[in-house]
Image (cartoon, rainbow, N blue to C red):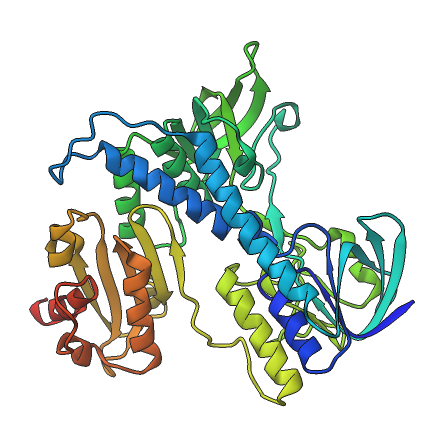
Length: 461
């Protein structure tokens, strides 16, 4: 039995910095990782997908003639695109692993961990054999994986997930995507720009059901204009392999059935926590009905001394939230702070083109609460910078408390929408009012400058 002060399971965006800082603080620490250092973000999520998005935008820009540049011919060199993605992923992964291996007081262990008692673990080592570990402090950062829906015949076809699609060697001739939310939409637009014929199936009435209706409508419009077929209210009932190796799905929409065939199928209908193999019943750590680890506002589980961070717990599943999780836990334990996940800002961005950046409450969420609000809205076609670069799709929107003039939430659907959203987030955290932003001096001509005009729209309403 190897005894440590702290054990971290999973080297994602919470686990890696947490393990390093615990070790540097003098705690003998073990970090157990079953696959690659860096977690989903570095290996299967943000880093590879946003690298591919950049290549897809380059292909899209090559086709555009609206800026007065006519590229007579271009080629999508998919192997080169994927090699660039692999190089960036490996550089990030290797850098992270080297940093861990050079940290004193920290042991990096590659293997699959499962609990054998309240504070004990058995690790099946990737190199072979098993080892037992024990610590008074244990941190679970095992993340999430693709949820596979129950569809008749799905096990008979070779479907892709957000992980396996990153290993493709050729651009698919055609692809059906089950799931009309962030992952499905990013991959759909990306591969459409690479040359695939894309159909997106969404079970709900609209894509992006958690967003306001105007966001869903605008995204549907620009994706449809690029030739992507979006079918909402579509329940997939059957999957089967055709004689020529393609995949046919039977879908039910209202009372009608139809079949759709494509060369590839991507499952992007949500994610589920990786908790099954941990044997949490040995620890007193409770999970909810979906398998997420229950935590309190300080990220401690139902078992004292065991914490859960990142996507394995309920709540927003974003890299930046996982990173913030580690800061909360670390400062509470080492600095006797009293930090909580309650009320923290949750910004996020969808990297379609144009991007969607969101912070705080949506208009729909505020109206459900019955608050007295004003809504500021500005179409991107009225943003000077957007006109200069001909990126006029989308809009900016902010929800403002009518009594206090404080911004309750903001949505930026537009070119570099995430960057503009971050400006509004800083204003919200600094308690800067809508009136102050309306009269603030921003550099001209920038996208953020139109925050002036955004809040002027309240006066004009």
